Length: 261
Image (cartoon, rainbow, N blue to C red; front, side, top):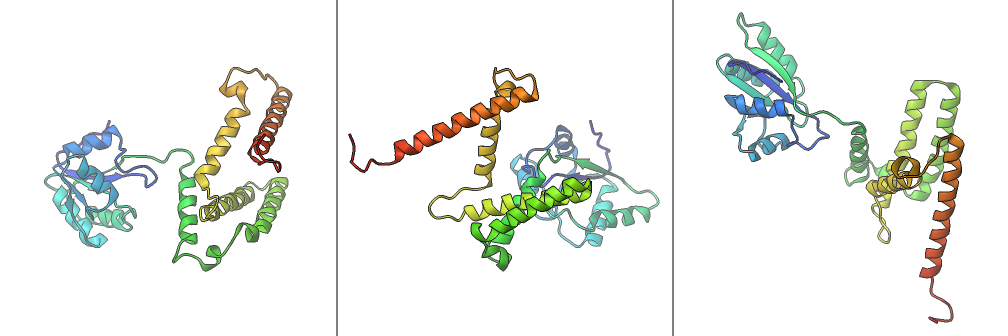
């Protein structure tokens, strides 16, 4: 548990990939204990979430050197908590360090993490960047691509990934896997705009999760598969049944040329 000094500056840092109101217990304790809570803008998502909880937040704009001096001076006689801005407040931590070193009796400065990235959270960045590239004002090349125009890159990137695996170069493998992931994200973003049958990256991910659960009943249900060979055989049976069910569904949905019987 974090301890709050009667005087000092706490910098509350949060993950931009976590909802701004989902803070750790220590973060809420620090917010409650602070004499003043400051933010660069009250419109920032974290500041808005803290205000919505009933805690007063005061706006304190300014360039990093000016803001750093204001925060350090205020923290000399009280407990001040700074809410990190969405952009991470570039240059502020260095400016605060410079301010602290010039004082004979500087206030304590604590960095408190209020939330952390969960595994896979960087995939949200992939989706956000892809959306920015494809949206108006983004990249004109990305904006004009279609599934057909992107298809050759999917084959090319898969081949380059296979070559990286064969080479044993781990850094190159990670890079090439990223290029394969880009193709999935790109095709999914293009698919959102289809007027007849749109789908998005969440639909792709949901379908994958459902398939993995369905084809691993020895993990997610009560089936038994003790060896890799058992798993492969079970997978083949389930896959064949899925294909048969799909074929039956398509046949049932196709109108008879002779009309209903």
